[in-house]
Structures are given as C-alpha cells and as structure tokens.
Picture 1 (cartoon, rainbow, N blue to C red):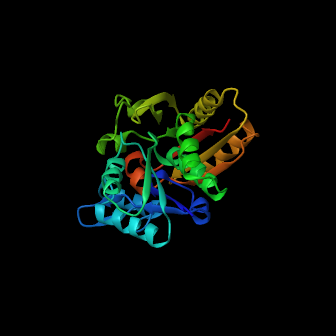
Picture 2: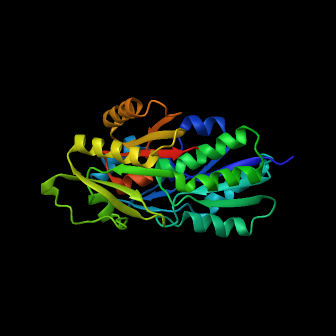
Picture 3: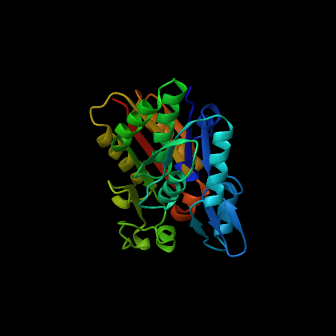
Length: 283
C-alpha cells in the first residue's frame, strides 16, 4: 500500500499544530551571518532573530543538497512511497528548483512537485490542504489534483512596517521602493501570478492598514461561502491577535483561522512588525 509524505521548506510557515498531526517533513532554509550560519526554525526562531538584525542583516539561502538528501532518506526509511513536495514561490527562492533537481535522480520514491507561486502562510495553506487530504485517506492523484486546483484560490496580504528589509535583502520584486518614510506609508504586498512580490496598496498608519487588509480579503472572497483564513506575524503578537479578532468579526463563517509566526528566513526580508493574512477559497 502506498504511503504519502509531504515535504516542505521552512518558508511555508505551516502552523506547528498541523505539522504534528500530519506526515509533514521540513527542510530548513538557511540564514547566513558573517560569523555563523543558522537553520531556519531549527536553530533560530523569530524571537531571537530580531536582536541579531540590529547588528547585521544576514543573507538567506535555499537548503543545501545534503540536507534535502537526508530528509528524503528519512522519508524512505519510514516506509513512505510517494512524496508531495510543496515549496514557496520559485520567483522568490531557488528551493523549488533545488528540490526538483535532487528528486529527479532519487530512487525508491515517487515525487510530485508543487510551486505554490506564493510565500509564507499562503504557501502553508496549500500544505494544510494537502495534509487534510492525506489524513482523510485520499490517494496521491487526488491530493495532487486538490492542491493544484486551489493554488489560484490562495492569497496572502502582507502588512510591512518598512520596506527597508526588502530593499536591503534584494527581494523588492515589483514593490515600489519610492515610499517616503516621512509619509509613514505602510505598504501592503502580495505575490502576483508569477510568484513575485508586488504592491497591492499603500496606506498611512496601522489602523488604515488593518482596514485596507480587511477590504482586500473581502474582495478576494467575494461570494464564496467556504474558506479558511490565517494570520502570521513577525514580532507583532499584539497586532496579530487584533487582526485575528477582526477577521472573526468580519468573516464569522470562516471554517478555520490559523495562527502562527513568520519564519525567521522570511522575517529577514520583511522585518519586525510585519503581519500576513492568508485566504484560501474552498468552494
């Protein structure tokens, strides 16, 4: 009998509660300082990242081949035969291509790779969908079909406190860098169809940013009746809790509202105080 495993990178921001109840294996991204390198979510958390950012802005990198190989060996050793690989956008990271190259030559497992064209919790929502299918007993083909059919129905809106980190880290994408800090404009960014960052809106102040995010979520949901929501944050616990409460008030029929933190590797680029809201349409 075939057994399905799900392989993800740490940038998918899958909530820990989901990881613990599903056959999810994670390959960590790397956070590289001048003097030391850390494994994302393994050796470094969001809590202890931000004090380090005051001293130095590190680089981030995709998982190395040895780390991926090790996880594949573990998956095979545990008796899995089929592996659904789900990664953050290939437009923002080389992880998808690294996974593709290594799995092409790996023997003993059947693979299917999904490039979510998304980042953070939005990529994580594709993982959650896959995990729910696997734990419900769906076959490999069905899991793949469900996940692929929902990629375009999944979106994230990031409230970023400043564009400084995206600019310094070279991940600015199509986000306008001409936002004067003196204007205190808060950009809301997302990923386009190619999986590249772009500016959705520019608003002044945190409250306006919240209001605009709620409006954007409403527009994306439209007339859909079944959907999940998610909130992820980087050093913004209070704001994230407030956002979660606002989502409950505005969208009482949301099936789930997941809650978690943005991975340190992504937080390097979004900076402290960033907050993401994910939406996945289910009907």
